[in-house]
Length: 271
Image (cartoon, rainbow, N blue to C red; front, side, top):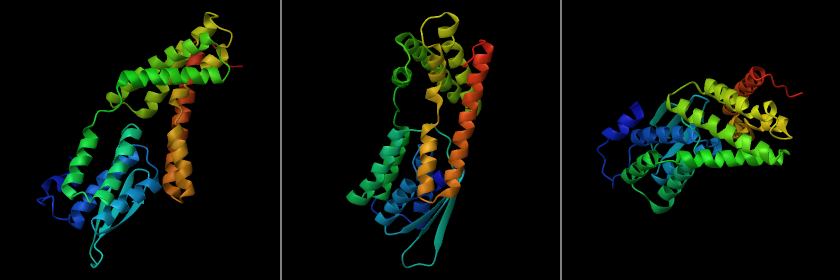
């Protein structure tokens, strides 16, 4: 349990009483940290945090950095301010949590939710089950096979890519649960997928073996970090945009290294 969560749990305020600046600041720090790890852009984090603070008659300012964020909450008629600094959580990107947390901020603003009710809703969102693992594996495999087809792969290539994606993503889920380094995880999964995809070349299964290998690792491409970095840059969050861009570049480099190692191990060349 971190300091912010401890402050929230120690509060003795009733549901009807408005939160103090200290309690609200602690909650907003945790709220924004979860939003960031779920894949939210900086502008969304700013708007959601300010919307919740305004609903309780306070103002909030947020400074977002690649690994930490600072939130300051103040009362309208007071010179006293409260600041919380919290480390960003490391968690898989989840559009489901992202959407639910944004909806929570609107519920607070439109429905006048009490602070206690909001905290319970927040905790329930964190405990809510995500998309079933088997469904993620199935949909990701079909999606990657579809990418293979879009790039000109034949149906044999699509089948091989689907199998390679299923195996690589299964390994990625297992390594993530073991808290393995994400960069190493990406490299290992790209290596495994490229080795399986090389079967199209080694056994002459289809007519587009190069497309099979090239698209077998597309499920690892960090598209969301790239998009978020561009959005943050447009909103002038240059530090966070640069941090997200560098993170995406590092992941891409790990993906490329795993792909090249797999092709080298199977003695398969792209050109």
